[in-house]
Image (cartoon, rainbow, N blue to C red; front, side, top):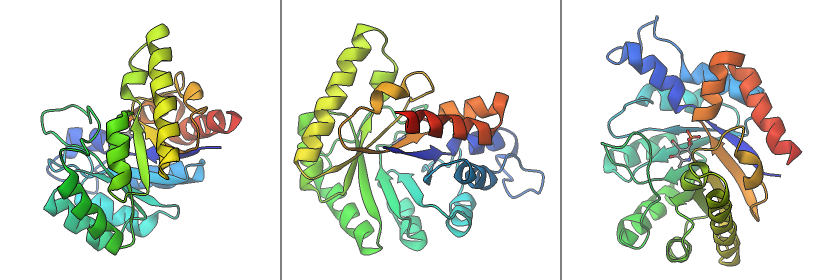
Length: 245
Ligand code: PXP
């Protein structure tokens, strides 16, 4: 059964909407670290946070506090910049998910290009391994990318489910089949498989049938649902949905 990693970025988005200049102000709320502890209590097996170069949501203090306080595991999502790599080397997360980053995007839009960035990725992966992190590459379910990811020495790929999530009806079924073939190909090359992006309470169930799927990283829909039912309930509902398969 796949497990649930909860992405808490959008708790920080809400805080930054009011406290962009002063995230340490005692009034600054909501606190993503408190949210992470609630998510753990409600069944998350890990906490994911994306420290973006533009610091639009998660801040450095959040990452350092998460490292100290969470008791499951930290999955640091990051682009490959020296600045963020140095933070990763200091905090030594259990997992790192490398993603492409573009300052103009609203959220991560596509997967990494493991072919074009072979050299940079290879070096970042080796340096992250040196501090004990397992590395996952966030990629589209394309054979070329999966084969390149396998050659780079990362343990995991995280299959980008965004285009599956944004299609409906037959088009969604076609996307699901692409994800299924991609996961099977990755497993055949010795990669481990996670998935995420755009998953919600309506579209997650079919994803659970992907071969070898270990972890789903879900953020926006859980944090959105938490506004109406509370975070603990929102995480419990998603964890039960996954457990029910
Ligand atoms: N996985 C990766 C690599 C992501 O970039 C994101 C978005 O930050 C997620 C999972 C979670 O996506 P969502 O917030 O749409 O659930």
